[in-house]
Length: 162
Image 1: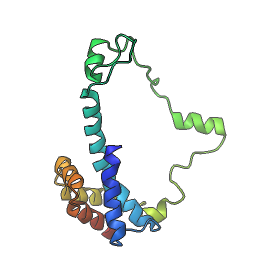
Image 2: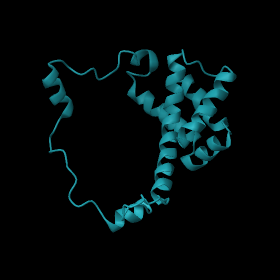
Image 3: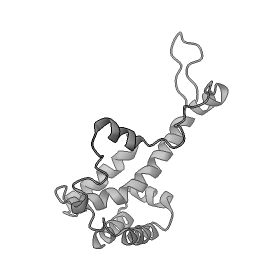
């Protein structure tokens, strides 16, 4: 997948320079926390590109092929989407079926997230890191693709400081 290639390159870069250890849960958590919004942006670009590219028709199957968005406009889904009933609580249903509560916080969470019981500090940290990206995921994504990791590394080290 084209989005993950850039994170693999970044990870290799960081590992080669001893900036991250896959055995340190806090470093792994910091990396994934910074990478998540960037990967989401990359996936949205990939989805947009995929839905606008041409797909070859299958031989002998009329109506196949074309541009996915054009096909959707030409032949929309024939009926309404299935919706979840109001007030449905999937977790409660699952717990009732299993007869035990769902663990809502993974056992490893305290070792991964030192601010687990400090939601206000987590919000402050997230805002400080978002400020490093200056609200411009496009520029941050472009830098990642170009192999310029300064902004990402700054956010990564800032995350670890909290």
